[in-house]
Image (tube, rainbow, N blue to C red; front, side):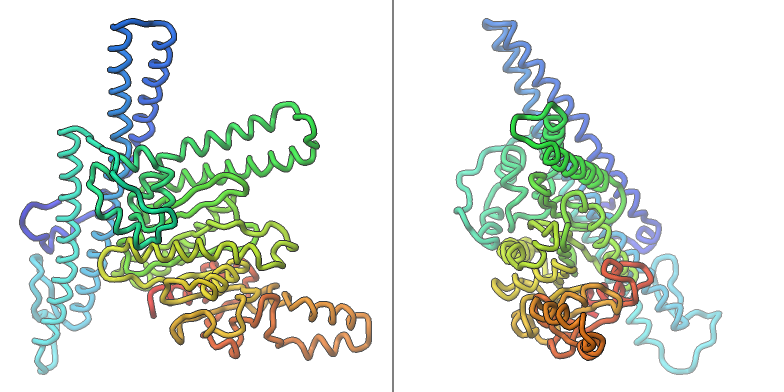
Length: 536
């Protein structure tokens, strides 16, 4: 990072964002060894209490307890260093992309950018006699914009690291906060409460009440990530204990098939959690932020790629039927593909994508045939989107919420019943959104989008009475005729097809990739989703 002077053209051109990201990951990698050391001290403390008493024993126990406390206090700081360096790397990469675009603009216009960033006509390339002053000024402004972004990122990161360094020297002092937000407080109120806390109070909450901080909409993404990462080992230990219990002899009254089903579910959740943990530990961009994790039941997870609080465009992706903790890594991969496409289309923009799997998705078709689980998810999705608005830094980001399959019903019912803090809604492979017209979703005109692949089996999800009628007609001579006549029927199981022109939304194309192929690299639907996220 630089000193007091502004970041210069040559500095930015040579900068390596990946090096800063890797440095952050190295700091985060210390969390495991520090935690092991703290746990080792806790074990020794327990041993001392059982075999040693008296004044010397009390003094030793106090000293060991204090050492363990100091190690525990530093854990969130190690994660925060990683966050600071990862975010610096992202903004540096964005600044370099803008710099490259400005240089390309200059080259296309017959201009030359020298080693110090000065712009002038290229003497080796003939130009028409028309004045070039305006074009020179435009390129110079683009260069200044890139350098200003890099300089601002540099100064902010240096200041945040300076605060952490000072705290490390003076001691990681944390104090419990004097108050908590009222039960049921909205994300905006939570955001104001958090902003009113001192750094010491915030550190105390992250370290001592990580479950509260990690799941509280309106708390900044960075703090939620710190808190939830501190809970990872505990969450995995719980799943491992459940697996061990199911491997023991059968408890009375538990049928063998039920035991095997539970065991399979727990083992799948363990594999999903381990794969998710591996992604959380991966160096390089985009950094993952853990915003929620619940391994009970089928398991739930909320994970962001990139920091939604810093991005100018944010996607929230809601998956559909059968999605659970075991599927979270794969579903996160879908969000990553949209984000990669956004980076290709807008390399100078900061974007983030969130996997929102914080609801009980249906496991089987009989469950998916009912709207109850989508309706139950509505309040949580509403709060989450409100929380993204409340914790965002700077000008509001463009927020897009995308639902796939049953997830589109979750998004639709949440928008219909509670409203969604979003600038655009996207439905892909939808069985219906719970409404018959886009205006019922409480969105601005023109900001409801949908795509259904020509070979998506979801097109067969007709209303119950329609399916019954077809079943009756199938065994009669009228069956083939009815099938031809009904081919363009826009009514689906949960309302009008959102990709039908009569729904009132906007359509974007998809190739023949089936129900799960909207994220395939060659599918135009992937490009369409990215363009909507970017507002193009």
